[in-house]
Amino acid sequence: MKSIQDTADIHRPVVWVTGASRGIGKEISKHFAFIGCEVCISGRKLNTLNAVVKEITKLGGRAYAFQMDVQHPRSVHGVYLKIHKKFGGVDVLVNNAGISSFKPFLDTTMKEFEAIIETNLLGSISCVKEVVPEMAERKSGWIFNIISMVARKTYESSSAYTASKDGLLGLGKVLREELRQYHIKVVNILPGATETEIWHPKIREKYADRMMKPKSVAASVVAIFQMPPDLVVDEMVVRPMQGDLS
Image: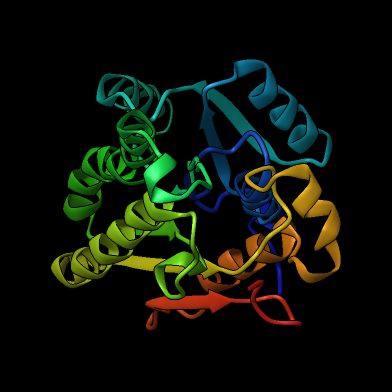
């Protein structure tokens, strides 16, 4: 199968990936770039984003960095306007930005709850609010929500993270039904344990052989995007071969 890069005149899908400076977001950006998309990556640290852009460019892809704090709707709106000005719109939104704090409920402060929910849930809502009107008008588009197995399986010391990801899972389900009439595909991705910096280094070291690689999760996302246009995967659970961490 040919990639988009093989055809000079074809429209290059514009992909916006949040939280793209590392981990799953970085790999998703690289995978979309590899198939010839115009990849817009956003995150709080511009120097880290620029490093990702440089890496993608060296591989022959196209990527552009946009500094953004997803907790602030004004910041999200400003980045969307820049992307729209440059490309005329967004074809694919990947809601990947996320933070966590693995503490028992009694030890988790309200400030921590607010930060996690503002980033993981409200930040995703802000991004969706920006792209959906133009997608609906165009009658096409994709929204990928990178969630977590915590939305399916109960883990202690993850109350704030679970609340945010459960909320995003529910949001995706409702959006899917409401936006179907506009041919907007909404896909919820639920990865199991993945070797990213969201885990403490000691845990990553201990369970490295039981965690998926970020590039594996990214490959599954792009595989869905490349499926025949008359179908959509509503939800996909991806787990390590050895099963979930307990």
